[in-house]
Image (cartoon, rainbow, N blue to C red):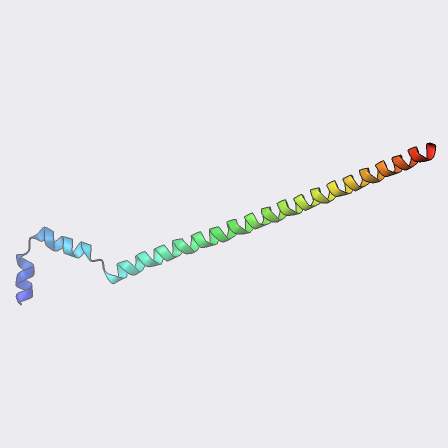
Length: 93
């Protein structure tokens, strides 16, 4: 009964503030569920973005390896042609 007296002597605005400042457990759980859902959605989005980036990186690396291989083949072929030309020049002399 003493508690009721104390509460009733508080101004109405202060009583309202105390109710608003302490949300119910259900409200807190709803907020947590909402945040958890948002985080899960973001996690899935980031995983998809990571997979896309890994694919791009793999394609880039493969392309770089192909260019290097073709460059080496081209250099080797040019070296062979030069050697053959040198041999033919030596035979002529």
